[in-house]
Structures are given as C-alpha cells and as structure tokens.
Image (cartoon, rainbow, N blue to C red; front, side, top):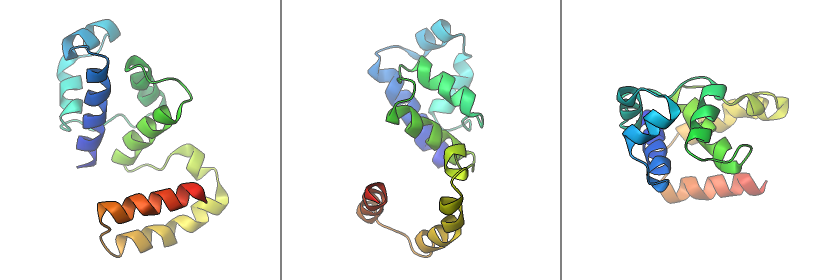
Length: 123
C-alpha cells in the first residue's frame, strides 16, 4: 500500500510537468518498464536517499525543498526506513517507540491523522 502512495506521488509529479512516461525515461535514461511499475506501486521505491533525490530532481523537485524532503521520506517509509535526519536526533529517536505504540494502538481517521501531523509540526 505504501509503495502505491509513493508511485502515485511520482506519477503526479511527472504529469504536472506534462511529460509522458516514455519521454521522462528517455530524457533521464530510466527503464520505462521499471518506472511504470514504480508509478503503479508494483515496484518498491529505492532504499537509497541518493537515488530518491535523483528521482526528485528528474521530476523537477527543487533540491533542499520541503517537497524534496517529503518525496524522499515517503520513499524511505515505503522501504520501512526512518530518514537519517530523524535518526540523528537522539531525543526524537527515544520518543519514537511511545509515539508508534500510541498511533498503532488505534486506527486514526484521516482528519485525526492530519490534526496530529499539524500538532507535531507546530511543536
């Protein structure tokens, strides 16, 4: 399911540039079959931040932007990884188990999840 979310984001970013899958792959020297699978959630995103950043650049996402961080974080999350910048914050890492137990203890509605995210961003 997470791979599908990443694929949908990838496809939306490509479509916003108004470039076909084949044109995108030709321009960036990517295999169209693999990118198609990636966009449909049939292929997991790469587990490398460098490769995810390369894809972001190819999709026109500005380097160092919040959009790039979101793109990379979603790709890593699909691979079951926690982003390195999060892992380098010892206080945050120490609170992750309690946070994850709390949110996994009950299914949050989309609105509740969005409110939680906004609360965390403000903190």
